[in-house]
Structure formats: structure tokens, C-alpha cells
Length: 162
Image (cartoon, rainbow, N blue to C red; front, side):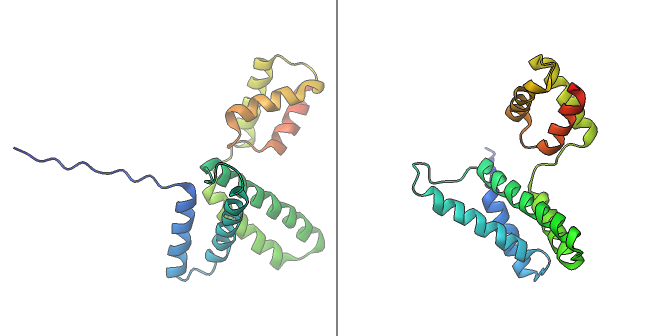
């Protein structure tokens, strides 16, 4: 008789993965990584605290991705301000933080792939004017919310529907 051990597949939540990465960076004394990871973990914990009043106390992976996207957006806005003000050292810090945040987010599609999806969505929805741009965007959000930059999407849809 042969005994076969079943392997347990350990699936970690997104939040747990980030916390593990923080612990590793603290152990390795990676001063470029752990300050940003601390900010991410702190933002997640703030969301958990805010969520306690609601029925669903746990954050889903989509909630964590939403937090990361918000953090990336804030840093992108800061980068623009620092560029205008000529604050290169602060710009560099923000850029590094964006890279770290992006490492946890799903990869964004490039300009060409985004344009193909926009054109396909326009055909699917059957719109012909910019007035119906919202319908196209909502269609794209249903399917591709994680991989599209909707700032680019808006610009592409405007050029296609002109």
C-alpha cells in the first residue's frame, strides 16, 4: 500500500502578501522598500477600521486593489506638482513609491491594447457620438477595470468618436 500525501495549496490574500513583503523588507533592512510598504499596510488597516461599522468586516482583494490605485493616483498628482515646482528629490521619492505600488497592481495595458479594447467596446455598445461616452466607459469597467487606465481610455474614446 502506497501512501500519498496531499499537498495543501496555500492561497494568501493580497493583504497578507503585502504584509509578508513588509516583514521581508524589514528583515533585509531594505530602506527603499519598507517605508512605502508601511504606508500601504497602514492604509489597508485604516480601511479595515472604517469597514468595521459595516456588516462585511473583511476587505476583499478588490478593496485592497482600490486602495493601491488611490495611493498611486495621489502620488501621480504629487509628481506633477513636484515637476512644476522643480523639486527633483521629492519627485524621485514619489516615483519610487509609484513603482513599488505598481508592483502589487495588475499590469496596465499599453496604449495600443487600450485602443483596441476601446474600439471593440464602442462597436459592442453601438455608440456613434461623444454624448454616449459614459456607456462605453461603463462597459469597459465591467470587464477590464483592473487593467485599464481610464484617463487614457477617455482620451482614446474622444478621438475615436470624433
